[in-house]
Length: 275
Image 1 (cartoon, rainbow, N blue to C red):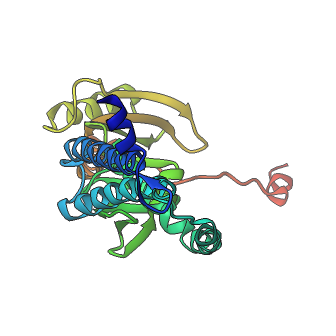
Image 2: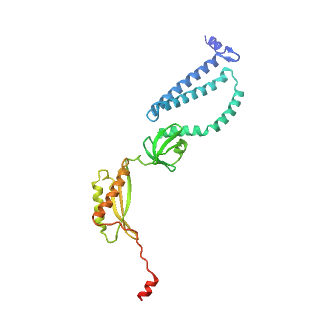
Image 3: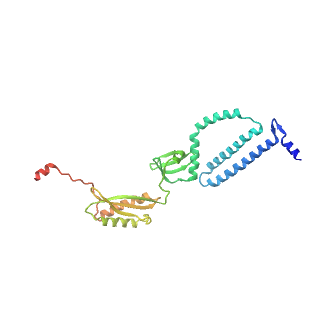
């Protein structure tokens, strides 16, 4: 019985291709199909909430067919097909295409890493290599940013991924600060008390982390008070502008003024006259 099976397996189907060669080729293709399905299924579960459905399906199809093609090329020698000439031509064509599509592939891979790592998401305010604004869209090859001036800028994903990304709203809170100068004749302690009172009354000025108000240095024309406040990232700019204006109005209402730069000049002629 075993001799019969061995004889069948060694029987040539065509040329030098035996039944066993054909069965091995079919087994390899079946295994590659199973592996491709497992990989694409796991990737779908991982990325389903991180990218658009059509983009995800495109990537999964590319990965699936790449695995199948690699397996197919691997079993061709078992089927008696000599691809040496084809491989040489394909290698030359591959080099040319590789150089031409290098940036595309780099952007594609960078896009996948961005969608997986998620350092930014749609709606975030970011700064990438001097381009600051709102993230409008994250595609496979590029990221679209709407600047604060209303301009739409397309950033290649390779540049986004390899650059330092500043995400202004990734943290729930953000700090801002002012330097408020008052006259030397004004009461600095009273000014600090007024500023602290305004901060405590504002609904979006956070109690934790605690705000800081203190005299930082003595300037040429003023006593400089530093004001540091934490606010929710989504509204920090509005809070910053609102509190700044209220500080100015409240200090003026209490007779505390923000001085203009002053400089005293002494003239030699005036000194001679006094003598």
